[in-house]
Each structure stands twice: as C-alpha cells, then as structure tokens.
Length: 129
Image (cartoon, rainbow, N blue to C red):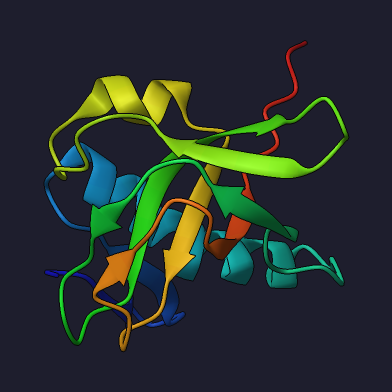
C-alpha cells in the first residue's frame, strides 16, 4: 500500500515510492512505474501482454481488492493455456515470485477462484541474455 508518485526539485524530476515488502515492490513497479518508463521512452505498448488461462488451483482472494497472484504458466497436451499458483502469496514470499511467469489478475469482486475457472494473466517475459 505505501506507494506514491510526485516530483522533486526545480526540474520537477518524477519520483516513485514503493512498498517495503519485496513482492509488493515488484508488483507496484510492474503496474505503476514500468508503464511510465515505457511511455517516457516512446514505447506504444505500456503494459505486459495478457493471456487467458485455466486455473489449475483453487484459492481465496481478498474481498474488495484487486489481487495479482503469482503463477506459473503452462500448456496442456492439447495446447490450452493453464496457470498454477507458485505457492504462498504473501508479500514477503520471494520464492514464488522467482518462479512466476505471470501475474494472475483476480478482480475486486471475486473472492474465490476455483480450479477450472478462466483467469487473465499478465505475462512476465523473462528473456535470458
């Protein structure tokens, strides 16, 4: 939650503040800072591409809050896109973030995702160089 945006100095240099928990900082960066940097750099696509996938797990989501759960994307033998949670979803759990290939978007009005539900996933492209 403790995130913000403002400017500082006579040149109004933009400044972002991010939460202290590592997963929260990552997700806040992805949703708020990365799009601004891409816009300033002249890119057209500001946000991560999204795909629909079938949830392989069931889980609860906090009522009234958008949840961005960490998930591993895969494909079934027939080519359907599927996603599985990377484990515990606490904002301090780095292991699941390291394995995540997507942020699974759970809207504010959804309090439970059931295995078999279709969910929207923001794909975290991780190109190794």
